[in-house]
Length: 115
Length: 109
Image 1 (tube, rainbow over the protein chains, first blue to last red):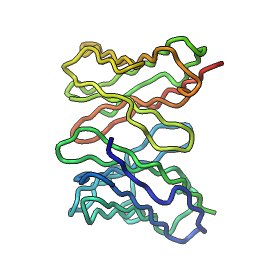
Image 2 (image 1 turned 60 degrees about the horizontal axis):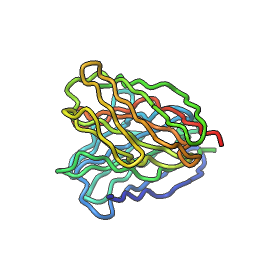
Image 3 (image 1 turned 120 degrees about the horizontal axis):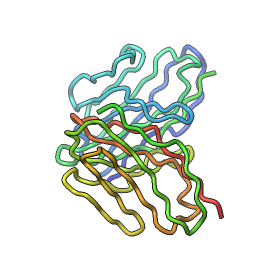
Image 4 (image 1 turned 180 degrees about the vertical axis):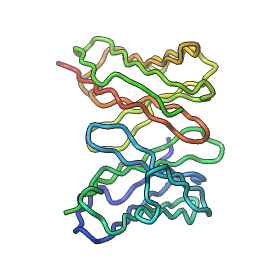
């Protein structure tokens, strides 16, 4: 199946700093990428949907100025957590779909810890 | 399509069959999916079913869909300890995936 690579898998940062997470589709063109956040023992919460070349669509309650999403190419989307706080500590997962494919392929996830 | 519900836990013995259930609300969903998540990892697509199908079998996995009741199930035959994970059902609605809460499957040796 298609491969989505997410990097880094783990990151620890200090409060107030920014962290960038990358999501790459390795063998297909991802017209749409999704960013999810998963709290411990909970399901995935959709944060935003991004289409290549356009602004991301954020779900209600997600601060777009805090979680900056860029989808500049058909193989790369980035999520930047700006001015991170301990409550931003979580597991972030991206997924990608292509134009003619209804399957979503997921990255390995990024464990963010803000200290 | 945002209310996808699953039971939280299921415990079975190795070799038995596991049945994980899911209910969804969006009758217009075209595809329904089962994903597996192992600890600290992303989601792995196990299988999916198109909404006009009642059943799909893929090796040890059998998906049953009751569209009238909006009920989806995943049966794992001959469950192994390596099947221990969290299983999420998801529906595709308006180009977004809505996930259930996940069912933690514990397989006892």
